Image (cartoon, rainbow, N blue to C red; front, side, top):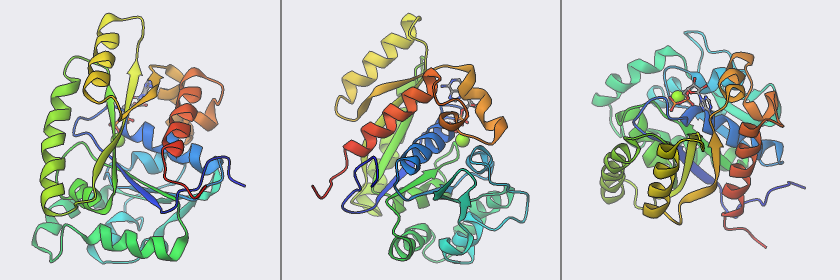
Length: 268
Ligand code: ADP
Ligand code: MG
């Protein structure tokens, strides 16, 4: 019996913020792993040519590794190339290698270029019994991110508590509204997570209050503290929640995952 409620229908999250280094990948791998350890079936789609999510989940991705590129360009099924994570059998990873960087340009001239990933996800959902899908996106709003926005029903935005935080969010909101109007009516910005919080600084506290004022329903209560343990975990090929499960960063990510799960529509 899973520790978390199973959602009535699969939840597909795009983890997006066009700023780099705000904690997208760290948030993706930790929340996905926490839900999988809690007994749910989870897929992480590495949608960033850097392949950081693949690395952090212990899945090797040298050039030539089959994964997200093949799904987008050759329309191969996700199930063909999704690999079980070495740490949890019900967590799968669709890896990305640097080859994926070509897709951003190659997709421009393809038919149905914006909804290739949506088609692949809907097939995968039917084949796999997955409960949660997370897309880890690159720091841009190009065709890779667009495919994930079209394939998803919910957006999770990690926000680093620093001065320009909200400027990036308003640009992201404009993109989301364009996608909603044209390509995916079902998309909602459901979840915001404050990351790299340093509660000793006024700035961190002020940004946190500001974000909570703008997005009172979306912002999770849990905040992820800035912590060396979080930063060092990827070098072990592990999310911090398995690398150092008792560290403050891990505890905060477990709490964030629980909040995400408890917000699902469930059968009972
Ligand atoms: P993004 O995917 O948005 O580029 P990452 O998740 O890769 O961001 O995080 C950027 C860098 O900050 C990485 O080196 C990561 O290990 C580090 N990092 C992420 N979250 C924390 C945290 N809570 N405390 C300290 N370092 C962090
Ligand atoms: Mg990243």
